[in-house]
Image 1 (cartoon, rainbow, N blue to C red):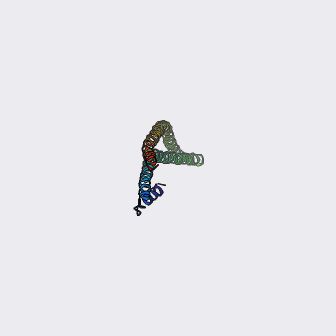
Image 2 (image 1 turned 90 degrees about the horizontal axis):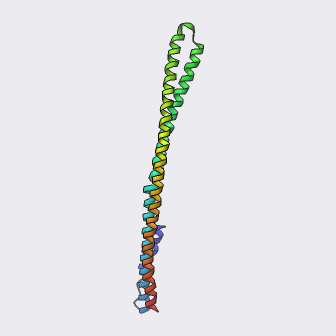
Image 3 (image 1 turned 120 degrees about the vertical axis):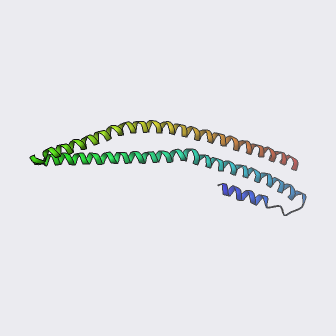
Length: 171
């Protein structure tokens, strides 16, 4: 969209080949209008940049944290499978190997329970922090949108006033 504004603006500025009075006034009007298009283009560029820096950043960060959570849960799942395998091995163990199998099962169970306890705490902490960060990010995003809209409105209102004054001069 910004490239279309820039193209239209440059096209309007380049139309100054005529030297009669009416064409000169029209070219001045087109020049002022092209400045308005440049202002609108600038507003869109700032808006797009703010989108990337606020909302885009928060969503990217949230995605990376979700990947880390997924990896942690995968490791926990692997520990659960290992625990289940040691339980099956214990059930099938012969009396002379039963003591070693019990030790393996206890260590696998302890590793799984430790991971589960840590995961529970980490996931609660993660979701609390991410919720706060997302709220702050959305607030920043909304504030940036409002500021950009106000700035763009001010630029366009100024240009509209100039165009209206120019229209009065032509009449």
